[in-house]
Amino acid sequence: MTEKQIDLGIQQLELEFGTGYVKKALENIKKFKIEIPSWIFGNFGGGRFGDYMPPAGARTIEEKLDDAAIVHKLMGASDTVAMHMLWDFSRDGMDSDIEIAQHVNKEAKARGLIVGSISPTYFMRGSQRGSLSSPDDKTQKRYIEQTVLSGVIAREIGSDLVTIWIPDGSLYPGQIELRSAQEKTRAALTEIKNRIDKKVNVLIEYKLFEPGTYSTVVSDWGSAFMLAQQLGENFGVLVDLGHHPHGTNVEQIVARLIGSGIRCGFHFNTRYAADDDHSVEPSGEMARIFYELVSGDVLFNSNAKKNWAYMIDQCSARENRIHAIMHSIDSLQISLARASLLDRQVLQQLQNSDEIILANRYFNSALLNADVRPIIAVARQEKNLPVDPFAAFIQSGYQQKIEMERSK
Ligand code: PSV
Ligand code: MN
Image (cartoon, rainbow, N blue to C red; front, top):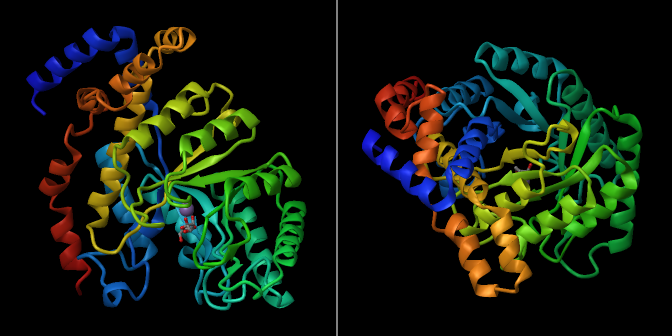
């Protein structure tokens, strides 16, 4: 965008939404932080396309951190990196090691980054009959111990946040007792709760299916919410955009969870088929979700305990990973800016007088139709960042450099 386009764009937005709201949107974009996953940068989804990795995919955690650092340098919004216990802190893919986590922490700090949420990895070797609900007590114990260790790592070097996705379920009716799987999971989580420091927040992620195609122990927001409520104050729900049946009104789930008062979190991504883990795109759905987060005051609440945790969970096999994560950050910024423009009093007046279509049109004027790119551009200028991070990335020569280095 040229200076002139930016100026004209801002004027246009001020005319339509008022100077105050444009300023608010700008401030929100400057403040907004999003955690990115270490696993976007490396090999993932083994087997697809014959283990294809886009050119210069990161081979080690150090290379993943190098890539995260350039993203943060260019976009200034993502200094925190989520880690997976068996991908990032393990020698053998079976157990994790706090010494590796300490090493990763040092490497992150050296690049101006912070170790963020810690996810126990329940879906690697030995988990084919489940993790926390495994009928094999030894296997269940191994995953309990891994989770307790993830709590220690989160407390000592992470951001006091553990995110749990339990892949347990079944492929055929009759394969397992549904209630026993639930009970075993609850018992394991109760032991975990008793052994994890209360200062650590634990978010339970739900997912409709995969790998279980017939049943999944924590398949929806309701089952995650029930568990979180039973477990206690430091437990919450993690919403991942790709984990619902098609057509689900995710913003309503967000509204419900905000209303419940429990602290929750988000894994942002886009899906078309199932759990695609694609880059975030600036869709109407994404802006409507941000409207709930902004109006529900769980983004920039002065009481930090009320703010939800925001993470990107993304990784698909074909595209350039650095482009992909930058695209997500940009799309989230666009969605937040749109949601910040809306005058809720105007909307409420329309709602009170039952002007159904006019309320919808006003809602969409910001959430669907506003071109907020000039706001994002000004936010970047004011933070001394490149207005176009994609052009800056291409000009930096970083891609060529890592393609050379990582092909050796
Ligand atoms: C599961 O599909 C998930 O969404 C969980 O968040 C995992 O931690 C992540 O993807 C990586 O497999
Ligand atoms: Mn997820």
